[in-house]
Amino acid sequence: MEKELAKYQWIIRLLPKSMLSLLENRIRQDPRFRAKIEEEDRKLTESLEHSLKPYHGRFERHDALPRSGIPKERLLSEIRSMSDLESPKWRDGFVSGGIYHGDASHIAFLNEVYALHSQSNPLHSDLFPSATKFEAEIVSMVANLLGRGESAPDVCGTVTSGGTESILLAMKVYRDRARRLRGVKNPEIIAPVTAHAAFDKAAGYFNMKLVHVPVRGDFTVDPGAVASAVNRRTVAIVGSAPAFPHGGIDPIEELSEIAYARGIGFHTDACLGGFVLPFAEKLGERIPAFDFRLRGVTSMSVDTHKYGYSAKGTSVVLYRNPELRREQFFTITDWPGGLYFSPTLSGSRPGALSAACWASLLSIGEAGYLDATRAILDAAKKLKEGIATIPELKILGNPLWVLAFGSESVNIYEVMDQMTAKGWSLNGLHRPECVHLAVTLRHTKVGVVERFLEDLKESVHAVKTNPSRGTGMAPVYGMASSLPFRGLVADLLKKTIEVLYRV
Image 1 (spheres, rainbow, N blue to C red):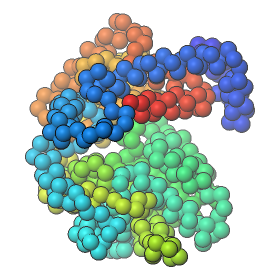
Image 2: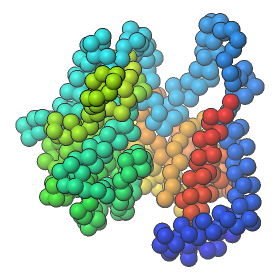
Image 3: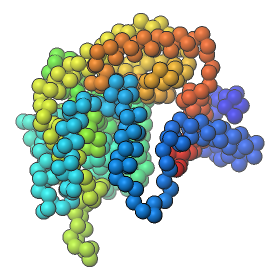
Image 4: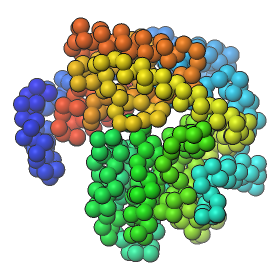
């Protein structure tokens, strides 16, 4: 199927979206192509079943409640066994991002805090005032880190479950505010093509249009192109600090000025960079302005569960003033169940995660974050220098610590598969085809950088001397890159999710 479509790629890519959609529908209805698609899906599902379900045959499957409860010690034994199988990879620094701290003593400390608050729920503030103390102080600490001061004294926010929820909430705020104050019925968000997929999700969930703007050669967005895309329906402009794919920091100052001049919202997505860039700046790195020190920045997202080193499940969304934040809150006054109000998308929330986040921030402190950032930047510098010595590879853009690299002479996805076989877990990206490594504290361990570079050189050599292996993720990304029809690729991804939920 890929080869047949490839013959017409150059024509297909010139078609407008409306015609492309019609052509895709016709292809879906063609029995010949449908049979090929079904065969490709079958092969993919079989491959994914093998790689995503490694515990088949190793542990008992449970597709219904047991007649009697299983002994707790037996369950704990199984959970320990799975943890023992999974933890070495991230503990030894073989994973891109994912686990950002990972030190055993830090994890034990967070687990102890979690256990003390495992029953708390911020929804019931009368029962658990400690949860509201933790969350208020988390927001305040993060706000002060990201520019609350003389020019922005009222920065405020809420704790959320992760970067996606932070982004969803901010985009909902801009939609609702524009509808209330300007009567905007068909709201639009302007974002670089490299902006996180959560902005696409927000547009899909909240019936907004996402206008994607292409990036320049350094993989940062062009402010001129953004300015040209603004119209009366625009409710928010987005910039990344840095962007997840290639680690580039968008020109936030210029972008936020465009928003300021037009009286619309500007959101800095600092989910990755919020706990790195402020400390990198203090260490002497030249970091472009990206936070509330800029008058046009009206909201930010920053993940405390990434480089803030708290347990998974917390992020912070910040707003320039309480008026904006109020648009986020949900209230209902005539429900028979009583007066109901909720600050975020969730009702009940795990207060234990907020307690662990609060404890993590306070236990590390500014000195700890400075030390961590220094170590990460040093490791990233060594990695960039090492990758530059491999002639077949090229680093994309000008990243600080989120490093994307591609190749014009070897199949980069086959290189990724070779690295996977050596125990590494890297992120495959496309458009352009590349792989990235988000450097964390796990990579600052002695010998990890050297091992990575050695394995990378061997992997490139293996692919160069024996290309087209066609296994692992290489064919999946190859298909996604070659198929011009987004619907077909979306179907492929949905089938991947279905595999995850099979018992």
